[in-house]
Length: 136
Image (cartoon, rainbow, N blue to C red; front, side, top):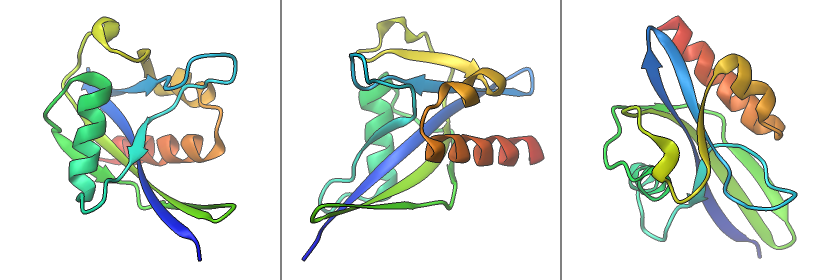
């Protein structure tokens, strides 16, 4: 029997001069770290929005989400006896100074954010988010 683990992956963004900017995080330090969304497990009994807010708070210190967008593109992974389901979201936040964060963060426009992401699922998620924001 597989253990089922649910995770959220959150792509924070802000709108400046009608153009979205995306906040990228580097969770792991070292040679194999890469830039991507805020991410973490959904706790036992925790609601999805609560897990998203917790990730934003832990990664950036913000306690408020202005808009939340379900990207409707869950990813499933089977690693040994663990099945991992990742739920991708975009969330609009207040722009902030990233200098005081406990993890490395940086704001990027789409043209720089997209090629920075090393994982194909991250690129697909930010592409969908960007398309949804531009269509709005």
